[in-house]
Length: 254
Image (tube, rainbow, N blue to C red):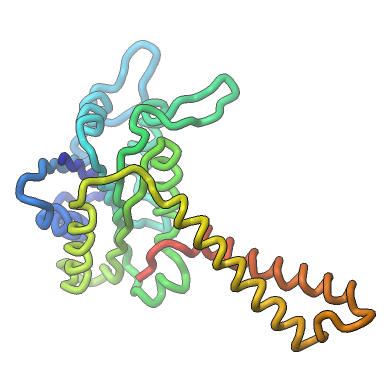
């Protein structure tokens, strides 16, 4: 099993790198592990005349690996420049573009990846403000667009004023390491998603009908349209809230 870690921080041996190393150190002894410190490479876009040598080198490592670990700190609520530059320059190597500019998974389809980031704020503040959300959204947009399958994500909060990774977070890294050590499989969560959706709808319908019964008296004579309208409104608000949560607030914030 081959693991490739892409480190997009400004410091080779900083706190972010420490959390990444904790994941790598706990992988099986027979695992092949390599870390690419992106600042070591002169990364720039390919041109018609010449492909970027650094991208060629890194891409060869990506192609040879079974599992990618994407690790970078969160700056200004988003992705640091070195990682963003790398993803931007890798765009046409990661995906296929149709004549209509549609983006389709490329040659890395069905590989697996883990996302890692750090931030200055506390776990509590990050939970309520979602400082690290955009970082994960960008990583997911790039890699799921390329057809990769996400295995998990990690947030190392509270890095301001500290000089070393926190032990509680290091323990979380080690748990993640054991999780990704199992040989990846193709995404087999489709059935689970349908089951989850069924229970979500069942619960929402139960809440909706319960509120209707409490407020209006469901099935009461002459109240059909009132019942119908209240059902639509309540169901819409509940569904929209759940979709908003899973779209924008679903990332780890602890």
